[in-house]
Length: 556
Image (cartoon, rainbow, N blue to C red; front, top):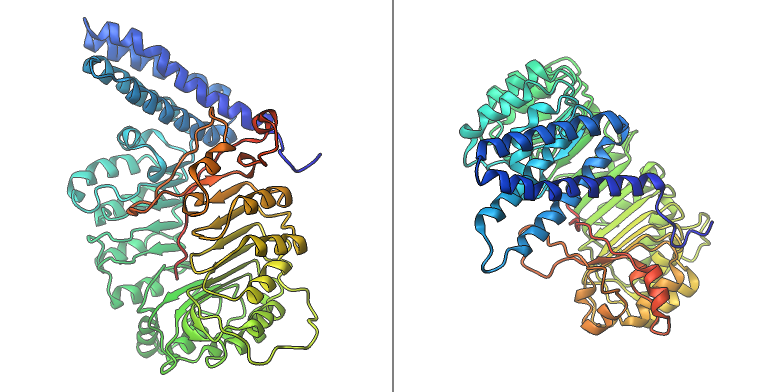
């Protein structure tokens, strides 16, 4: 079967329709509940509660447990759409009482999703109107494994929320992954240690109540492998005790003083200490601290370090036998021996992130392609790409970037450098271009003639003053797997007519705005949304589809 315009699987269609069915039950319950509430408010609540309990049991009995998370996702989507539809229906002369009753029914209907089969909940992706219900009914999710409580009160009402969180966590015995930012306390940690014995990952970032005293509680969690303590009040002494007494810890998140922590352990404990850390993220590591890291944490797989050429030597990284991901910030490709590091460790690397790295020329890109044959993700962020003085003329022994799946380029570069990257990554699935990359229609045509990018699924071009509809048409014709285009609103040569002409009126193009960003929202559109002007409306109806997702900002 052709890869172009694959139909959805029956299972996916069934999940989607089941989500719509949940919203339909809420819509049908609105009128009876509204009528009953006018003469008997308590009776209306009781009737709605009875109906919710019946529907919950009905879904729990008839839906296979492994599909319950998918059903919840679709049901939340459908309920969110119903919330928006109900908001728009409130006219100038509409009854506020009836409107409130309708909204209450929709919010309460989300309770039918609370069963022991639900394993993943993230408050960040829930509509704000549904979050209060999820917070108040968490105790019912006895089978939950992954729980993201988000920022809760943002640290403003920690004491007020502590009791409710503790009462819910006491029932969540299957919990393995918990994200609770800003509002975590020692009492909450004690509850987790006593009741969530399988806990493996905790994210307590920005929780001001977490101090060195909290470490004693964390050491009682025998299965704990990952802990995020960034922007808490845990000091060097606390991190020392964490590494010494949490025997299975593999990731402590970003800790700029991790080098000093290892130095303290090395000075205070005579016996040779080795830890199971697999992730290292620091901005202030000296040469001696990096050397200690290699000696005391030999199992590191992901290394992110800010380089200071007066204090550290990157060549010590070659001692990390399991290194798979490397992120380097503020260094020079040749002067700081990045080439030599890649020459030794490049064959193991699957992820390479270079940020504010200078001296990158076409030769450097060729070296990366030859020394990192298994590379799956390459990021060049705010790097200085320069013209080469003498080109590497030796025939390339390995086909460049054949395993590359993700390419992020947020650096100014020449057409020659860009062409080398893009013509060789024939299996790439994701490409992100920053505003510094200047693309033209002629360049895109030339590129696609050489490499049609048949596996490309997502293309992000954040801003351009040169690309036109010609580029979009060529991408559709060539990139047969393309699903998403991003930020078409920032293509200055595209008029609103250009953007909307190829979109069927019955399909609304969604927008997602990055939280805290006042700029234009991110628009992501599947390639089927855009067709040649010569195609018929019938063809347009068959090919159109729209989709939205959040942009990730590359960070160290």
